[in-house]
Image 1 (cartoon, rainbow, N blue to C red):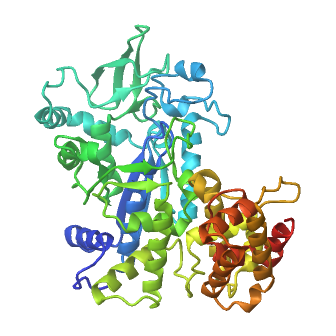
Image 2 (cartoon, rainbow, N blue to C red):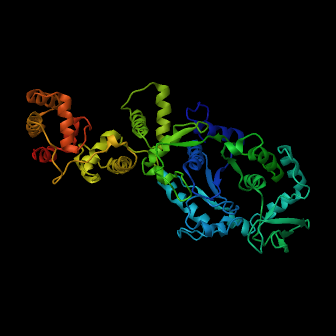
Length: 526
């Protein structure tokens, strides 16, 4: 295993070192994450998944063998119907069922839980995250945890005492560390009546009054409550690291109780940290997933390429609240990533301390292997203009750009897709334009304005003779002077003629983007 003597600059490496330091040398380190698929797995939930992935990568870079498990708690109770689900009246009839027995009213999967699982499992591979998925319904219903449930029952009083330390009202005398789904109604509205000291539990269905005795080794109805289930699984899987959100890490929360309860199962709590919330900025209500107004990883990947999604999280400490932006901040985030990449490839010189930090962020941002060459670094704003000039034809834009190498094409194409999604969905109105086309109503011009447009036509005819945008801009200013109008008026008229707006991108650069033939075809109508 690699030496850990050097002070790590990135938080993921710092936690990797802490795990090895606190858990000692091991043949296998287990890192865990998980969630109840009771609705869309939103981008805030994704923060936990990628935080674990980053630490997993850091551990591997130290030479460690690592198992990354992700638990779907799909045997939890279906407590409420999320907003905007199809056929909510059907779902209402399944409240208090285990979510794996709730139908998927969207028709996408064999049950409600699976539909939510599939939605994120398909996206994780796109950002280079490949955990081992554990499905808790299958484990509980197969008897996999029978001996662990029995161990909890044997430690009933000790568990109750731990939980009571963190409660304002003590648990009832007849509390049991197990819950049962009714074999008569499938609901969790049951009361445990007793345990025979071995494998049999007797319960009552509170809605029907019926009673039944079940064998933990063969039943598919019993499970542990969350504050016992979580530490049991830490022990069962040998978990060395698992972060959690504010709710679990709050004083007296489930992490506080679990790190005590896990010792009753013969293990110790994993290394952990608390991660903060992720806000959404600038989506303006345009994104609405099936479970309400939430944003998931698939939504974010429409605007940010996979390596930039990773960059956003890798570049932010987990305990820092931040926003996923869909507004003009998108331009800055792409620029920040490009700067990070330039630093990594030595194109942008920086001081040693920043170099080490940025290089590590860039490495952790890559979906798979680190590319051997820098990407084609076209500013996001400029790319948006290019795409609009070509009416969203991505391949035409790529073909128009000079010096694109074969190794850069795929990354450039992915950025084009994101840029087009942003400009057509979230960009402010002033960013959007479309070139005037044959048949559009002509703009009414004064005599001097018409003279200016003819002068601009003559300049564009000689476009190839201008070595720089500065030379072209000077020629455009001269056109305004020759026509006897102010330059601002020429720009306004030109934008009106070209894109039907009073303003637009810098005119000289815009003309080059669109190309001589396309600009002349529009100006030639006047």
